Length: 151
Image 1 (cartoon, rainbow, N blue to C red):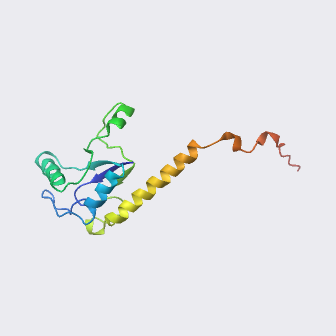
Image 2: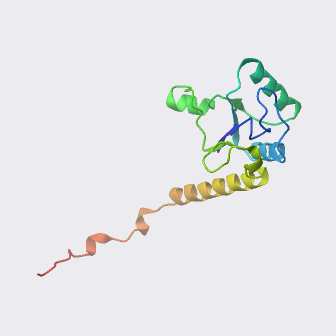
Image 3: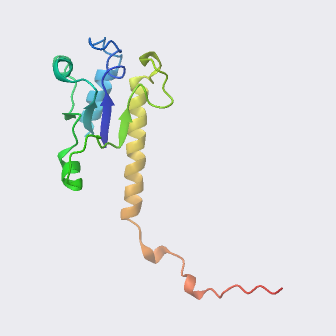
């Protein structure tokens, strides 16, 4: 899966333009998602010096990711453009609907990891069903006679 993860309030506590403290379990969960084969995009409004500070923080903390505010090369090739909107299968953001406006109420990163893993498993199972679909297993409806209703 492609996962877009907000920085301020999601990976670190909100303290913009400074960088807040790392949110518990964020680093471990993000790195595990990366190691599980997910494509991680850091999704942030930071620019210029604050963006560089964020990169330096992620590198210093050894938080693994593939891109920042940029689509995967496969998505860019598929759609022929690298739009400003980052394409992802899942977006993790403290300001998402259902999340109060404080990172204190963001679900724990261990729970987020479990939700992403469950969603990926569900997706893979559905893809396996589609790939093993056999039209011969369908009921042959041609043998049924039309229903006649008498009034």
